[in-house]
Image (cartoon, rainbow, N blue to C red):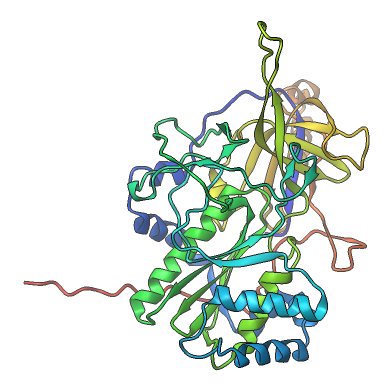
Length: 466
């Protein structure tokens, strides 16, 4: 795949109630291990591997130039003085806090994320999902959500969420919005019972990376980590249209591997001992802690909104109340479009290696004051298609023109046929600022020329007992 395409089209859209492969295949089976196996099998042909050095060159190149050897030497001294890197020393979450504090003290830099050990806390999704408990999570300290209640972009911590009891094995209800109502969603079939309210600060849309950790280093430990990290990355990419990729890591005792999940492929680095070769370990922590949201996989062209939806006024008291729904703002060139309600279609978006096609109802946003992203008016209804393109793919508007050209060549009335097609307002490949923030680039996926095909750790076969 080469780039991400967004195509707003002018048309009235009727609701299409579609189910994703996630819902069709997984709601019938409550076994989380089976679900992880299924999604891992789905990306098996796209699983690749590379050296640790190649992983940084391909997926975190800025971390190689940003942090000098002396920076890492300083961190190593602090960790060695406190015995944090001993064989049975501190947990990765504790080490990351020491790293963040050292960089803040010596360079005056504040971290972008925090790395936490949270094996018993469930991240709350915005789409129907299963209870999911990654051992370690890297979460944004400042949320990218644009919240009209706050009147500013910043961290939002709703005080209560609704979810299914984790032990039930049933899909969770989507995250409550504004503490009142879940986002309307075609992926929710309405059959899931609501569980008890629980409080959590783990908003899935703010999770930047996930990790799975085992004390053992046997074959079954490696395989279990592999399946869980694949399942976790799948949930993150499906939950959030604002993602381009997801990072992760697995640890079996002292052996660590770095993971990257993109729409074109999955890559896992060769394993290394983070006690014997701590520099790679520390460089990875620095990458997770201090990189920009964009470098951690968040697409600057898609932002999450808490959209105010006015409720009816009470005729007796004259009082009115508002509720809030989650919406997404797409930037296409210098124009902005806000999604309205659930996606029309998003079946493909569940699978990591895919074109991740989502189709939305949208309205164009018009800002009276360009510096105020909270005050806007909305235009006429349109449809927006968001998809990752195959290399050298023809855009939808180009396909339409090819069809019209064929009709004209055949002597047909192409003007009469045009009324059966949508009119394209914009149809282009999404662009990102380049490294210097002065230009634009259109390749949204990483170079993987050095990657080699890989396979998961084989399952440990249990002998039959006679």
